[in-house]
Amino acid sequence: METEHSPLEAIKGSLGGRLRAAREARGLDVESCAHTLRLPTRVLKQIESNEYGGIDYQVYLGGYLTKYARYLGVDEGEVKAELERIRPAQPSLVATGGISHSRYLLENYARAATYVVLTAAIVVPTIWLGVRGTLDRDVSHLAPLDAAPVAQVDAPASSASVATTAVASATDQPAKPQDGAAEGVAAMQPAAQPPAAPPQDQPLMASMTPFPNLGGDTHAAAQPAAPTAADTVGNGAHSLVLSLESASWVEVTTKDGSRLEYGLLPAGSSKTYHSDQPLEVRIGNANGAQVMLDGQPMPLDSFRRSNVAHFRVEMHDGKAAPAGA
Image (cartoon, rainbow, N blue to C red; front, side, top):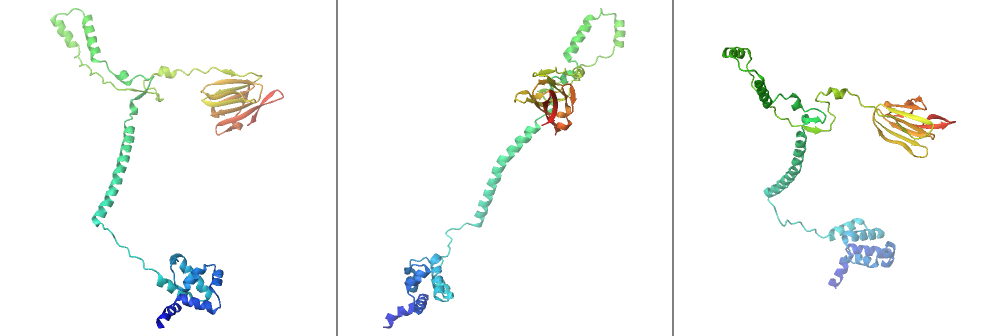
C-alpha cells in the first residue's frame, strides 16, 4: 500500500500538487481556470501532474507557471525554484581544434602585408604618373606662332657662311704685292679670329597660349586693331545703338519673341537695332557698354546688377523710353 501512495505523495509535495490543492481549496475546476486564464485545459492538467513534456520551458512554461500560481495565490518564489530545478544543464563548449600563437601571428601579419602590397601597387604608379606628367612639361620652350625663333634671332653666323665670305674676299682682292709689301700688310692686319662654333638647334614647340611677343616685333604690336564696322539690324523708326569697349554677351528680343541679337560680340563692336515694337535687352559686362536710344545717351547704372544690365524699351505716344525689367 505504501508503494501505491508514494507517487501521489510526490505529486502533492511538488509545485503541481500545491497548485492543484490551492485550486481545490477554492472550489474551482480545471476548465474554469483554463477559461479564465485563457490557457488550454491540457496545459493546466500537465502542470498539476508535473508533466512538462511537450511544453517549451524556455519560452512558455515559465509564463504558464507564473500566471497559474499568481491566479491561485501560490508564492512565485516556488515557481522560480521549480524552473531552476527543471532547467537542463547547458553543454560545455569543447575546442575541437587549436592553433599555435606563432601561426596566429603569422596569419595576421601576412594578411596585413597583403593589404599593404596591394595598396602600394595601386597608389604608387598613380602618383608616379601624375608627378612625371607635371615635371615633363617645359613651359620655357613654348612660343607663339607669330614670334621669331630665339635660336634664329640670336644665332651667330655659321662656320660655312664664314668660310664662304672668306673665299669671296680672297677672290675680290688684287694681285699679290711684293714680299716686303706683303709683310707690311700682314703686320697691319689683325690676327684672324677662330670661326664661331655652330649653334645648337633649340627645339621649339608651337603653342596657342597668348604669350607676349618674344621676337620684339614692335611693328606688328604698334598697329592698332582694325575697328569693327557698324551693323544695323531690324526695321523701324526707333533706334537703339550699342557700343562695346570690351567683349560682351548681348541679347535683344522684340515683343513678339523674335531675337535681333543673341550671342557674344567682340570688343569694339557697334550695332544699331531698329524696331517699332518694345524691346527687352540684356548686356553682360555692362561696365564697358554704352547705349544710345533715339540718339540720346542712356545711362545703365539704374538697370545694372552684378555687371549685367537688363532693361526694356517701351513705346508711349510714339516715343521710346527705357524701363526696368
